[in-house]
Image (cartoon, rainbow, N blue to C red; front, side, top):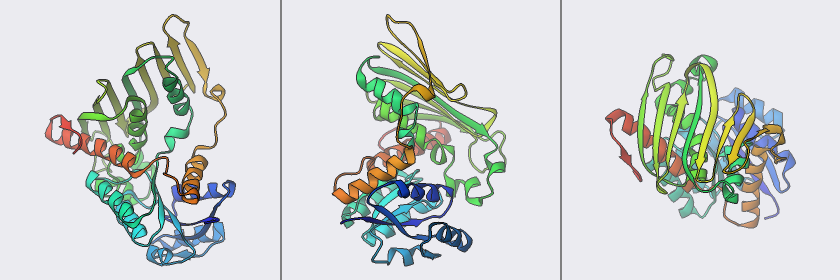
Length: 332
């Protein structure tokens, strides 16, 4: 294969942002787009200068498409991925992979059975300060991580977005899927796999939503470490920050201040602005590039379906836990 010819399914902002990065990636080319909403499909087709379709099946039937970027509303990820696999297309699927672990597993099985690649878009891995913190942990300088807490909470989700699907649990899944799939994934990168989950959540302010607008998730990791995630849409004053505790040091990041603070045992604390953490390839470009290269070179994708399955299972376990007021063991 000399070039990966990609079709986009789902012409919203995220989908268009993903394929826009192809302009800077050798070996990848957008050849068609599809969206059930004709206005969205037509606008994307005109923007990129490619044919557009209102039925994704028509895009999947094209012989000149050998891979797809899947970015429709969350609940459509499983059927779209399975249809693409049946058509023999390699797949990049935007997060969240699915809203149920069983659906995520079915997506993996479909792709494995069809012999196509499946990569999940967990882009936070490639952004500052997250990539920098992961490198620091991997270096061993601050020892072994044993405790981690991340807060990502805002407000007004229902009022800020007109898409009806975002305010319905059956379509969006709730904040642990729609947003915090990123934070769950990153906590796993630092702490390892999760053994059990306890969730406490409810709806307090955003009555347009039929799901929780405040979610606390406590995680017991297989390495014995502990984690806490706070997410949702209930905060009038939003916040995005995190703390990591390790055997030889501590690391804090704060998006509001735009800096990382850390201290290694026996040394003075240091504060580093995000802009001084290093130069990194644009995150969306990197994830799409890695997918294209995996298809071109027939190598494993860097974020396979199993990663998306693990994140989905944690979010689902937290919702089960909150509903039944009990600790939920993984795997589901």
